[in-house]
Length: 485
Image (cartoon, rainbow, N blue to C red; front, side, top):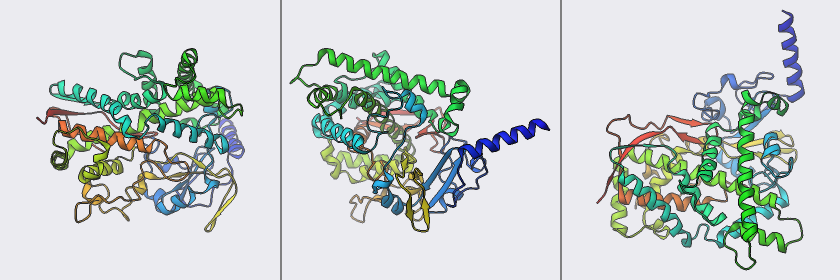
């Protein structure tokens, strides 16, 4: 009995220490200390609850998980668009485990993803300009993209019978961006680089929400059972990998002979004495590129194969359109406007797959009044992109695969502003243009050259079988490929 009392007192004290008053925003029932997890689905991962009625029935919902993790969930597109365009909703904080292990200087965020204010704007602006100068999102990069496309099509063409689709696209996709960043491709022969990609896959498969639920002091005292040790080692390994590449570039650096993003950044560090550009920012930006560039597009392409295998009629409709417009001509981004059914199919796959089911955190920089609510400084908002893109109020039969929902009566592609796989607002994904181009070129080339068919000897891939701890990653599945001609 005494033990129960002591444990209860401990839990109550911990809750009082780490928890403020429960929000008056509607949402699932929250209990002191525990929050909402007893009522949140988690069968397929931490983010499996995003479409639960108790979460989505209100334009903004509040959830709490554990003593410290609190989110305001935006389920309404217009509210998200309004709030995320405001400076007061553009702050982002690094978690304690990231502050300790992701950056060159402990407790000092660098790079783009987890910085704010002038530092964020300087790093983001410089990165976008430099990447564009090297062809980011431009036609000049298409030959690099095509190199990766040709390799994976050759791999699929040579395989006889069923083939298991796993993380097939991770290395081809990051290799495209990494050629701009470091001047070199990532191939299966590069053991160290392949390991770095595998670690990114591990990060997104496991997510990091479990590292935010408990206080940092608890993570440090129980590093193995909480997963803290594993994540710290991954971040340290990625950081060391980036610093090693930077050191190699410093050894071969020649002013006026700038080969890639790293060289341009090193040149900027030498010419700018303001302190705005540092090796810490460069290293962290490279980690940002590596994580974002590896995961989302590659997982979307995995969903592309899944949905094309399940929807043979739509696949054939795309192939007929591609044959009529291109014949055997190599697809280019310039052909996008001439292939409306194919673009509509890609859009429908992005909508249904919802690879990024939520936005990244948006933290208020000040107390903010909105409608009848007052949000405190430091309130953390995330947009429920999964719900917004499958909201039955705006998408008829939202879980049905139907590319025609994006075509008008004349067969012209019609953009729907509620399909937002890259987010929206001041913190929207800076890699959106490259990702769109990669998705288009990979998909069109695959359909043009290969038939993606269901397996003869394994179950059909099931869109309901996925892991959602960070992104929505479909379980591995089997298909077979046959040459179109």
